[in-house]
Image (cartoon, rainbow, N blue to C red; front, top):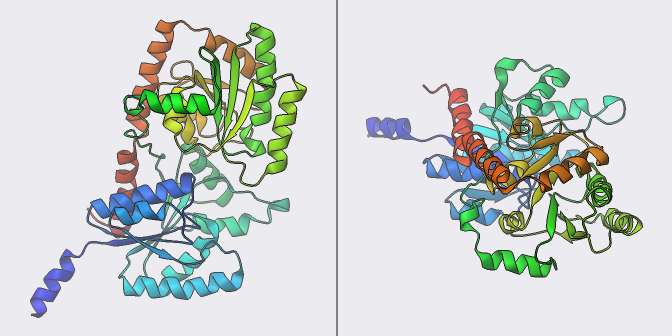
Length: 393
C-alpha cells in the first residue's frame, strides 16, 4: 500500500495558483485566464485567486478553479489577512507555485510562499508609477522578487533591470499572446460588421480611423483628434471618420473634454467617442487604419498585434512595446509620441497607398503577428518558466 501511495505521489501533476486583483477586463486578466486554461488542458492543477468578475466563467469552463478573496485591497490589515488565507489554500490544494500578477496581491503571495516553502513567480505587466521622489519604488519592488520574473516585452525587461537592479538570469521575456481564432478576418461575418456600422452611424465609403483603448489621457486620444484636424486640412477629405473605442471607466470629465475638443476643431460628425465595444474583431474590420497614439510607452500594446492579425494597417508611437510589435514601414508605421502633425502626415500617406501595397502590407503583418505573438506560444513559454522553477528537465 505504501508503495502505491508513493507511486501516486510521483505521478501528481504540479499545481499553480495565480493571484491578481480582479477578473473584469484588461491585459493582466486576459493573460491570467489564458494561462489558467492552458494549465488545465495540460493536466496541471490550475487555481486563480481574485476578487471576482465576469471572466471567472472562462476559467471554470476550462476545468480550472477560481477562489474569491479580497486580494484587490491595498489595506495593510486586509493584505495581512490574505497571507493567512493564501497559505491555507496552498496547503489545502498542495500548491507548488504561486504566480503574482499585480503589486498588492504580490505582497500577500510572497509572504504566503515564504510561510509554506513554495515557489514564487511574478509577471511584470507594466512600468508602474514611481510616485513623487520615487517613493513607490519599494512598493513596486515586490514584483521583481520572484524566483523568475516574467517580463511581457523586451522593453519591460530592460525597465526592471534598470530600476530594480534585478539580474538578467532571473528575467524571462514572454510576449503577450493573441487568440488568432478570435482575431481572424475569416471568422467575422458581414452581419456583425453591418450591425456595428449602423450602431456607430458610419456612412458607406467613409475612411475610418480607430483608436481602441480605455479613455485615459496617456492613450493619446487628444493627440489623434488634433491629427484628424490636420489630416482634413492636408487631404481636403470630407469623408473622414474617427472612432475612439473604449470605456471611460467613470472618467466623464475626460470624455467631455474629448467631445469639446472635437467641436472646437470643427470635427462634429467626424470624431465619435463610442464607448466600449464587445466585438473588437468586427470593429477592426470596419476600420481603414488603427492607431495607438500612447504618449507614455505601452508595456506591450495588444491592440497593435490584434489589428495586424485582422489585416488592418497600424500606426503607433515609437517607444515601449510598439517597437517590438511593428516592423517599421513593413508591417506598420511608427511616429514620435505626442506629435499630431507627424501622425496626420503618416495617416495621409497610409490612406493613399495603393490596393496592391496594402495587400502586401497585410500579408507581412499577419505573418509577423502569427509568428511571434500567438497565444499557444505564450502559454508554452510560461509553462516552461514553471518547469524551470520546478527544475524539470
